[in-house]
Image (cartoon, rainbow, N blue to C red; front, side):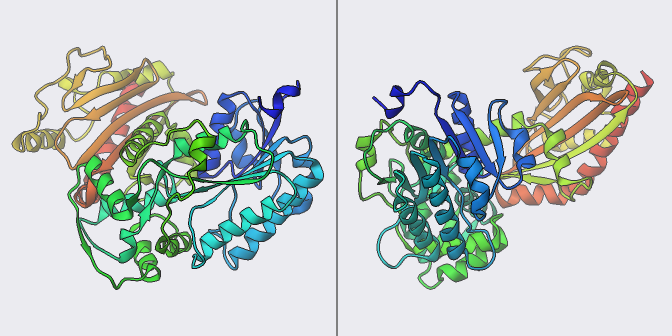
Length: 485
């Protein structure tokens, strides 16, 4: 029986770091469990649109102890998921200050439990990053508030910094000269399993603060992680081991080829000299969780990323980057997204009508000769080309063929998403959305591309001027057909 069953009042959970990777995933799980959640955010306006209707958002900062007092009132369990690794200056001092402020405020407010995620490593020769993570855990456990600290290895999930680093290396480098840290052992954990531990920490019966080491089902080297990612992506990669490249030099090199911010990347890589494997298996006995293996963790990360892309409202995601469209499109994980928007003074049904009739004899509303050339080239390399047409000139159903596309999603008068079936070094989708705008409607036409390795990137960027011309003209053609219908 958990300590909460004696109390009829719902427990209130304070979550820090809800805008971060782990915190965002945890927030979703807590809301699905109908937990009473209060989020602490330095900029509440950025978080508010992402929380459920029953979740509170408080303005506050762990570096400002005065702002924590109101947020802590009535809290049963507080999750500490913030860190200063990306900050400028002395991040170790900043992390200690934040932890002391949080611990002090929790103690004075009568918080009954703190849950924290730190870094998994052993020994005295730790990097600054791992040493700081351990120090934060010490401060929280010494606060007088019962603290459960999880020490985790590399997290595998779409969006985690460490996974993005591995992915970018594999995607961009057919041949890798690998330093000695690539052969260091880790015990990578799937993001779903890490979140499961964090949720289970609400219920576990403990009478004193504890540290739990958590990891996945396998011990593997970083090279093996990269190899498994390459296998699942269908990429052939050659790794040439050398003993002379230090983690510090590696971090500078990684900054050229990965999306991880140079400051964060350096701190991550400097910690790779330390094995991150579980030595104390107490977590497997204390929690009813069976962690996934590496292959399943990577597979789920890729599936989750596909689902996130399919569910993304590009009208929100792309507009957040400003009015200027970046050359070559925007990056979302390993995917590239390029979008064109047209406003027309007609209802949504009229705007969607030409979209629904696209392909086949009607064509693609622009550059028909270029489309025919693309179809001819596709057939030349063994693809399907444009010969399939479409089964019905007016109606569309999920699964229908539209030339060298296939209908993947369809909502009348709102959404059409096509998946490419032509030959290319990667995967591609073409998505159309229509929504009300002012007195008329807005048409958003989005190209999504998932390049397969370096050749896939070269394919996209070399052809981008042609694609930008064709798809811009297509958006113009669809808008004109809607306006003149």
